[in-house]
Image (cartoon, rainbow, N blue to C red; front, side):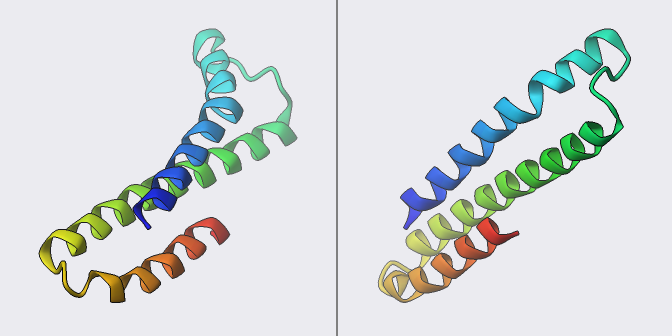
Length: 92
């Protein structure tokens, strides 16, 4: 189950690097937004979405590893709740 969480983290960070960071670098370098107001709103939404998904993925990876090391016998029962949390991260 941890592999799915790592894949989710990689995808959200990749989208952040492709869709957000180049425009953020342009804005930081030149000090003005050249891409229009509508794209600015879209850019901010994608930034918040990808950053939030990345943070939640890291949180769930930490929780998954905590459960796996603290309760190794009961870990198989908690994998279902982790898959539900991963689904919620993807939907959010």
